[in-house]
Length: 114
Image 1 (tube, rainbow, N blue to C red):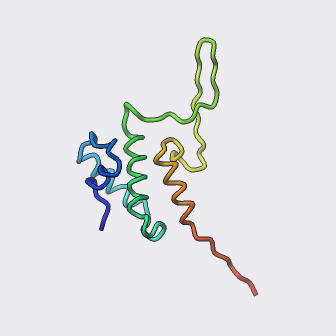
Image 2 (image 1 turned 120 degrees about the vertical axis):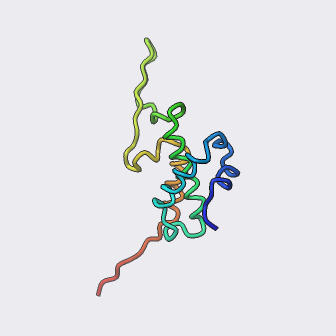
Image 3 (image 1 turned 180 degrees about the horizontal axis):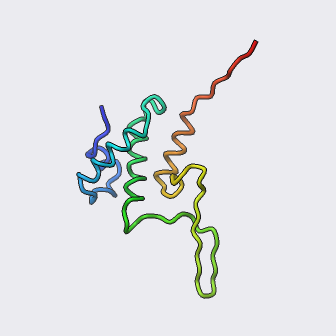
């Protein structure tokens, strides 16, 4: 069965308010970015995690800014940062879980010489 918005909303009810049109649009884009071969039986879950990540980042009211990398107490000052090792995936809990899932599904291989 192919990932769909209804199942996504069942698993991630926090996105119920996202319009179907917007969710369908980003679902189609997300499915092109995630390989069924890479994730196997966890393909749908990987798609849903990346979709949740994308919807979070594209929501202007709730988009994260990254982890606080410095802080000043007097006259309040914050600096936000992001580890670019995984692109913007570290910015949301969904992206972080996607990275962990991807790491768990990497199958190492050996190249044997003569």
